[in-house]
Amino acid sequence: MRGNLLEEPVEAIVNAANGHLAHGGGVAGIISRAAGPELQAESDRLVAERGPFATGAAVVTGAGKLPFKGVIHAVGPRYGEGDEEAKLVEALTQAFARAREGGWLGVSFPAVSAGIFAVPLEICARAYLKAARTALGKGGLRNVRLCLRDQPVIDAVLKELKP
Image (cartoon, rainbow, N blue to C red; front, side, top):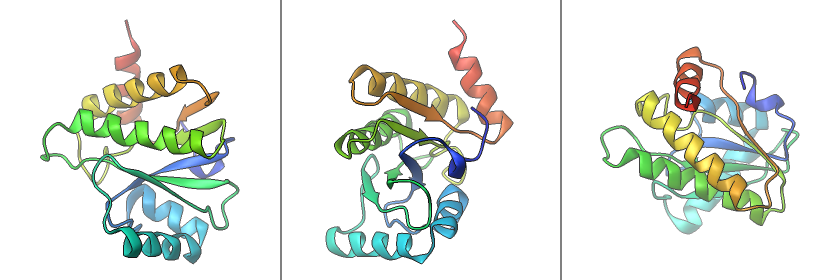
């Protein structure tokens, strides 16, 4: 769906994160600014305790001022790392696992790795759909939403949905 991730009718949203959970730009920056300083402070504490998170990991923080029960930070790959599609599927699969662990039935995710991390859109589209279908097939989640705002990403996903 095309929309604003911060207005999604779900219990948790996924953030397109880096391993240091430094939420300065892109989707992460938008989420962090809307959530308030407590989201970045909690992220900083997690990294101080556990070290940077590897590509493919996902971790939960509170949502600060946002109306969600939590924000799930999925560490997607950067273009050029190699095996970007599998790494992106893993990051989103882990994000959906965190949602199930939280007992949340609905989760919405943005275009992870498609922006600042520059993974080609066709790779992202395949990964998004594979991870979402797998998550729904595992049960627990009833509402998995892909919330996009940029037409090129939407077009790539629509193309991937065609039989």
